[in-house]
Each structure stands twice: as structure tokens, then as C-alpha cells.
Length: 460
Image (spheres, rainbow, N blue to C red):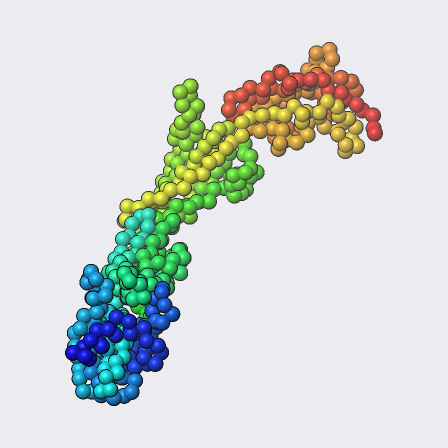
């Protein structure tokens, strides 16, 4: 009875003995040893990690004498924290006691030698038997989601496994630091380098914006907090998503130039569309234009085109449709095998018609010196925009028509100072009238597009 009373008293406080005591509790075959992080003491217990389902503990008295070994296991379900260590075995008359096939949990052994000297050792045993069995695949038009399946489930590993209890505090709260860190070092790799993989260190992988556009296998590697590596590779996963992309070019004086959203374009605007879609079999284009009514602003379709990507990937809308206005160009990518569709929209503005009065000179000198020899617009590219028809008439002061032109203002070379009969017009003041109509049906007549013109023959 005297020995039993000593053991009961020591059971309460001797669990925190110093380093000499810790040295007498070992874990043969363990792969890692750590210490607890109790909050109210500097003396910590050991944590032994085994790979597999069970572990082994061995204890001896520091004297090496024969002793009695009383083994206890921690039961967190006990409401009274002081009663949570429950005896499960006792061995007498040996100098070394070994406990094989131990499940993970907290353990304590009280070792009393023949001299009636008792020592208490406490430890926590982790058994890392987690398996990575498969990867659940959710493959859609918008994303690919890969969710590893582990045993136990990831939530249980994070919050229930690899936990110990803070014995330095009266309520002995749970600490699950190692479970929370179990999936902290995760890497994903795709066998197809063209798959745009996100940077992810999380257990679940989501590939989106875009979803994968190429077949690939995917490999996850988990290096847990105990140095163990788990890995799994999926079978090849088909790419079912499609990606819309296109090149838009504009007619720039007979050659194609890439569309610039910051540039100004005039009617009639020639366009070239080139599809650069990925993982599709059919392509579609559409152009809508803005229509403004008293009740609303809406876009109405004015042109459509479609093709199999194997047949052609270009389209050329009718330039006569591209009068001044606001347009939206829709390009669709369709994978008819998977039912996935993607689209891209480009806004295009064709300038309203205009003639800049500032670009019309009021004096010229057709004397053949190469300077100011023609009466013409100072900057046709900037001053004349989206003009459908154009005419100019020049009159003498007496009202006689001396010169006229009708046609494309860009092709007008200007008046060289000769009359319709071919004679040189005399020096003096002349009167001009410009009339034009834009592709938006805006009329330019009279108003600021008439005025006086001074013709000089003298050389500078």
C-alpha cells in the first residue's frame, strides 16, 4: 500500500522530469523525434513519429535495476483532465519494458525499481499511415478541379490526427500544429507544358481562366511535416474547354495592319479576321452596330460568318457595311465534341465624317517654284474623314466657273491655277464652294466650306 500511495502522488507531477528521465523512454524504429510545445512550462515531452499503423515504446529505470513498469494511455474523452491517463499494462521484475503495436496517442510509464525509487516518463506517439489513394476529377468548360482523396480524409488529418494535449495547463487543451501543417508543402505538375498551371500549394487544384486546352496528366507531391512524401499521378485527362482568340486587321492603303484600339479609322473600313482559337472545331464571327432610338441604345447584327476550323480560319466582312459608327465584333470558338463555347468581343469605332475647314488654304502661288503651287487641303489624312462624295467649284469675282472637281477627295491633286480651258488663271481673288456627303449621310454644303481664295503669280 505504501508503494501504491507513492505512485499515485508521483502520477500527478513527475511527468515533467528533466532530460535524464527523458533519456530512459525510447521509441525503436521511429523515423522522427520532436518535442511538445506546452505553453506553461519549459520542460517538454517527446513526440515520436512512426510510418505505418503502430509504434513501439521502451522504458528503463535510470539505475538499470529491475523494476515495475506501469503503463498508461491518455484518454481525451475523460471529463476530468487529471484522470485521463488510464492504466493498460504492468510488468514486474525486469530492467527493460517494451510495448509493441501501440496506436497513436499519449503514453506514460511509471518505473519503480527495487530501491523503491520511482520515475515517470510521458510521450506522444504519432503513426503516419496516411495514404493518397486517388484524385477526383471535375472537368468542365470553365475549369478543371482536381481533388486528392486521402485516407483518412484531409479534414480529419488536419484537425483530428497528429494532435496532442497541453499537459502544462489544467484543462489540457488540444494542440494540432502538426495536423494543420500536414499539407503545407504541396506541389502540382502537368505533363503538358502548355497547360497554364496556376501557382498553387493547396491540396485542391483548380485550373481556370483558361481551363486546360491540351490533354495532360497531373501529378501531386505532398511532403508532409514529418518528411514523408506522398505522390499520385492521374491518367491522361482530356481537354474539353475551348479558348477564343482572334487577330483583327484593317486595310491600310492596300496592306493589312493590326487593329489598334487607340487609332482612328474611317469609312469604308476594310477588315480581315483571323481565328486563333484553341481546341475547337468550329468558328463563328458576327458584327453588330449601335442603333440609337428615343427609347434605347441597342446593337443590331449586320454581318455573320462561320466555318469549320479545318476548312478556313479567315473572314473578310463587306467593307460597305463599315460606315461611321460603333461596332462590336464577336468571335466564337466551339468544340462541338464537348459542347464548350468561348467568345471574345472587340469594340471598333469608325469615325464620323468630317472636313476640317482649317485645312483649306486661302492663298496659293502656282508659279512653278515648288512651293505652294497647288490649292489643296493641307493634310488630307487628318482633315478628310469618311467622305463618300466630294466636289469643289472655283469662281472668278464675276461669277464665272473657272475650275471644278468631283470625286474622291483623297485622289484630288488640287487646283494648279489653270481654268477649265487650260489657260492660266489671272492673279486675283477667287471664290470656292465645297460640297460633300459622308458615309454617315452627313452633308457638308456651303457653311464654312466656302470662301475667298487669293491667287498670286509672282515668285517669292
